[in-house]
Length: 167
Image (cartoon, rainbow, N blue to C red):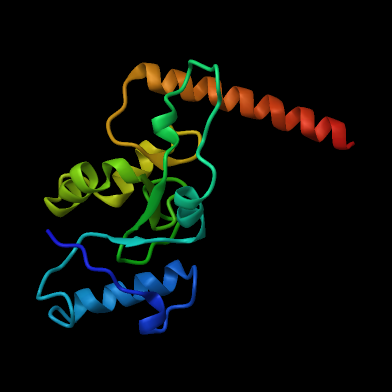
């Protein structure tokens, strides 16, 4: 298992261009040994704008609430599937080729599971859809999902109030 850093600017990938990163990574996999030492990796990582903000912006906080674990809303990174995906025909509804993954589960849960082919990026996407921000956080328990449901309800109520106030 290996992770290599590639600065997109050094290989002609425009800033925040996830599709460009996918094409570059796929080329590395197809040319096995052109920087990958013959390894065919199951996924690639991208620090897109939302990922950067999740690490550098204000941390998620809802003081006094008890229904969600704030750790579930920590910084994340984008994990992409090397092959192109057609969202309209894909088996995972809404999957566009990548999923946001909580940084704290990346190296000890996600990457080994991907590398050993225990899960695929689509599997993580399906689990991430339960999370209010569509972030894969690893294994979950029922109380987490219930808390996320409460979070979603509160968020939807606040959005409705905002919309009503702007009319």
